[in-house]
Amino acid sequence: MTVHALNELLLVCSLVLLVAVAAVRISSRSGLPSLLVYLGIGVLMGQDGIGDIHFDDAGLTQVIGYAALVVILAEGGLGTKWKEIRPALPAATALALGGVAVSVGITASAAHYLVGLEWRQALIIGAVVSSTDAAAVFSVLRKIPLPARVTGTLEAESGFNDAPVVILVVSFSAVGPVEHWYVLVGEILLELAIGAAIGLAVGWLGSWGLRHVALPASGLYPIAVMAIAVAAYAAGALAHGSGFLAVYLASMVMGNARLAHWPATRGFAEGLGWIAQIGMFVLLGLLVTPHELGDDILPALLIGLVLTMVARPLSVVLCLLPFRVPWQEQALMSWAGLRGAVPIILATIPMVSGVDGSRRIFNIVFVLVVVYTLVQGPTLPWLARTLHLRDSAEAADLGIESAPLERLGGHLLSVSIPRGSRMHGVEVNELRLPAGSAVTLVVRDGTSFVPLPTTVLRRGDELLVVATDPVRDAAERRLRAVGRGGKLAGWLGTSGSA
Image (cartoon, rainbow, N blue to C red; front, side, top):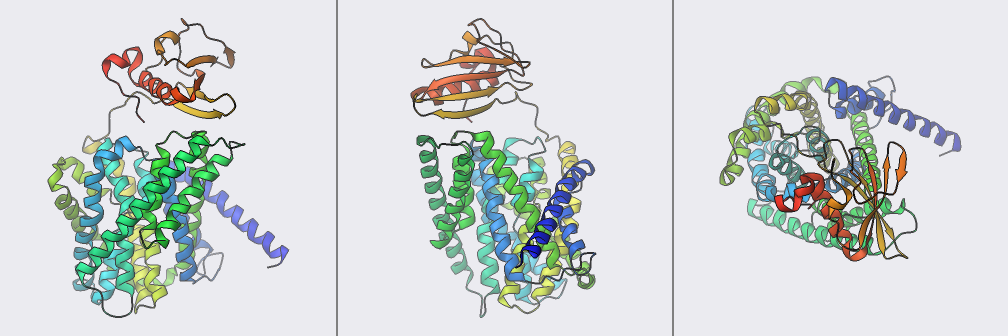
């Protein structure tokens, strides 16, 4: 590649990113899911669009899609709160395993009997569209104040169900007869166990290392966190486990470990997640050939209708039956089984494997994802309001950033008091911080001052709290507890756990 060609490529990439960033603003106002905008950009750049770019490399798309999915799962895991996901783990696991099995069976039957596809093709489509998309779930649900159990279940399900679905799609796309179902089940359980063990181990070791090593620059912490997350995926995949589950669990462990410079790390991960989503969807848009979709629109609508109205609700009802989940929450979780880039990426597996009719499988999946994302995403907030499932407003949590003071053996905590925090009106001495920690500076309306014990804290204040290593965690827990419960947090039993 010449320097001139490289400059042209950089110009095109930068313009695509700028258009995609602007499209996020437009989609947030209109309610149109941003992933559809990115797909549209790719289609416009493709051979049937104004860009006239001919791209048909399914193998490259699959590799880049896997890499993007690793980044998206890492960003999602870093933002997942353990206190919300812990009660939802059994239900999410049931949905990720049993729910996938039910969806595959019903959807594949519809593809075979209603559309007339061969059983191998029908099973591939059933497996491909049974996975909920992590990027779609994370981006949509975190904008809607839903009950913690609903959000935790859906987020954990989207993080867990990629592993069994990938195994099923690869098995159905392999040359030769499909393995017996009990062999597939055993393989799925083994890969999940290996991926979970590696992910938890890598996440714990990475958190321990980052908490005990002071890096020379704050910008190195986000790089280290993402490198650890990617290492978890690679280790899990090389050990013949689920790399996707490994990266999600490792990121979740680090995301709940109160690492130094955490806001900067979250911002960095979120930026990488957006780049991964944009690049992945644009590339998938390039891969599709719009003039070939005409004959596959009706089959996609029929299969999607069965998936959305029969397979997904039935899988939710059957899998959540032991957990006695209210019907309103079951209805919302049935409608919130969002599909996105993951099914389209998985649809490239049979193309790479040379399965007969693989191009039609890709086209059906593409149309299904576009149409039903357009229907489900914008209507989800309305359904939550109709079912009275929008969570009541809670006290806003504090924003706390920690910077290690290696030579002093301590930490400098930067605390932001947001609107709605119950720390508003609390005096400094009423914080009752543990010995070895103290509020050293308050910044209010652009003016900084050293507080007195009787200084009353206000919303919008920025506090600098110095804490020695032994009491750093206790000081942060106490600050969060006061932020949630006010000066009586200790007696009211308010927890400061993240």
